[in-house]
Image (cartoon, rainbow, N blue to C red):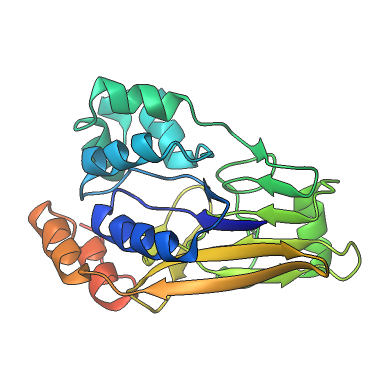
Length: 249
């Protein structure tokens, strides 16, 4: 079995199109999406149209939930931009997403942790941020989850972590569409990939177990930066240009 894992598209249809083209060449058995699909100052409706057509199993990310549940007037600018541009069919599609998806006994899909879509699994939540947690902390965040592979997004930082005591693997495929961000709430984290390319991951099951591959794909990130700048988000524009975080506006 070969599975392509995408996450954190954030309305970047140009990055998504690059990933789709590469996935077509890789011919996986299935593609799964770990959420945060549409929020961002780019092309939310255009992204939603593609995702509606793919019908991938899709986890509901925290920003997907904000778009669905929060009043527009109380949303932050990232979610409000998307919410105001999504059509009814796209919102209806977003409502079909799930908080977690158990693909098989071996594979669990989540956005953050198994119990909280707004909590990081592969980055520290307490103490110094931007660092990988130790194994004891990771096991505590899993809270007894036994799946051999847990696929998680949310941090935008690609990681493949092997837990020696449980034999589990945590896979974070990184972000398709937004390579750096600054999160003020509820836990501060500057997530910086340091690479402007779109990212996703492949995981393959063979007789010896699972193998993993992280992929980085060039796309027209300059156009994404110009679109973000046009829509008043200079921090996002710098992220698309450099892969590092700039001042939000």
